[in-house]
Image 1 (tube, rainbow, N blue to C red):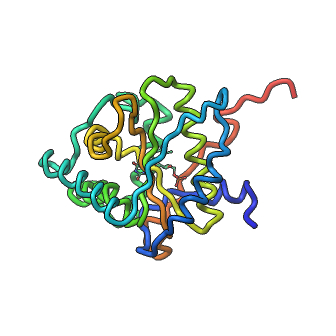
Image 2 (spheres, rainbow, N blue to C red; image 1 turned 60 degrees about the vertical axis):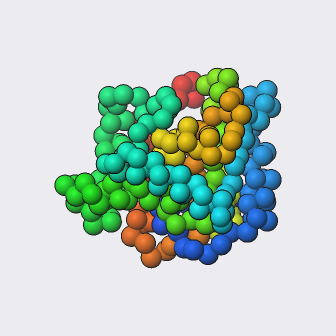
Length: 227
Ligand SMILES: Cc1cc2nc3c(=O)[nH]c(=O)nc-3n(C[C@H](O)[C@H](O)[C@H](O)COP(=O)(O)O)c2cc1C
């Protein structure tokens, strides 16, 4: 059995999946485990939409229509920008830059090849080939604390998936079309789609899945006092 620390270290963002299906029973089992994630006041402020088969295709069609509407392969941001603060500062700016450069280098895509980079970004909207897509929804009235709790649910789910032999990629990119998805799923006004997630079997031969992103060492982000 995979230890928790091994699972944490092994989890990566998978960006190319095999077509091998994931069953409803597997998705239910994952959600059944992830619901034990903690949340302040035990609010459990998460709602999940899982899509497979025709429902997955329908979501992909919504995304394609948005890309076609934008005309330049970049969807128009919908709703508030919940991804990065504007004008990222150091060290965050360099970290973001580096992981992108490393990923495109592995894929053999040059920096100047904007079309190829955009085509890869657009693969977000196909769940990178994964047979299951998940959407993480939160009530708009919730505060920052509850958003953090939703994140705990997502990571718990990703680790449980790993134990099942499944890969994941969290995808804020889906948030760029959150209003269109909101209409598509006919969600109540109070709901907000935060993030997507691809779920499936990683393609072990895909170069992009060889990416191992770096992490700052402990002493760069932690100060241990009074030991
Ligand atoms: C909430 C969240 C949203 C993310 N959204 C995307 C996304 O839209 N597309 C993508 O390719 N990667 C996305 N990522 C993956 C990050 O780029 C990745 O976690 C980071 O580079 C560290 O790499 P690792 O997950 O392989 O450890 C997201 C990660 C998180 C936690």
